[in-house]
Image 1 (cartoon, rainbow, N blue to C red):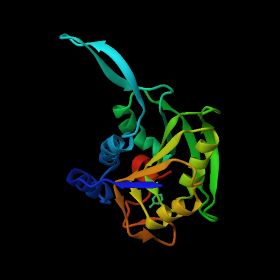
Image 2 (cartoon, protein in one colour):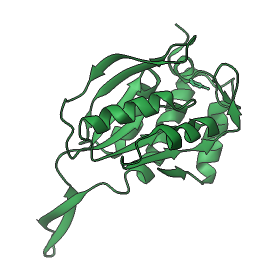
Image 3 (cartoon, rainbow, N blue to C red):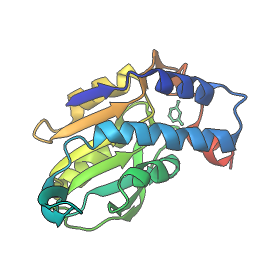
Length: 211
Ligand code: URA
């Protein structure tokens, strides 16, 4: 597993506003989107490209364009949806699938309640979007799900991670999967309810309001 933590003053600034409990949902959504676009730049560093002959106004040349099959972006519902436009802004030709996974708050087990993905992901470079890497349970389940369908590699993009979640990924992910995780920061710990400390609270609630 490869871990990349963004190290940039703009990320630190935006993250601080995002964490602040007084930041309203509309600003929170904008900041998530901006942070994801910054993360996406790093996360997509190993996207496959092929040669593309073109003509500039001056002369012919061979450039590059994204290879087929198209990359697959998979937001994990519900909070991952808030990251989608920040990702597709940078990679508008990506295909988008959805995985509905949530944590049973009493057992902390992961339940898949929705799946809108092709059965065959052979050769696809996949990007999982979920703002909070807390226990790591959802990410392990989602990554195995994609790898079992043939994904070539899986890159997780999270805003915040807890050390416990990263450790779980190291322990529980099949080591044969080409897996990378990109985060804006690694926080201190999880609390007794598996919330990230200091964190930013419940990402889904802060994006969309409490339901
Ligand atoms: N999910 C959240 O939304 N917040 C946390 O702190 C942990 C999991």
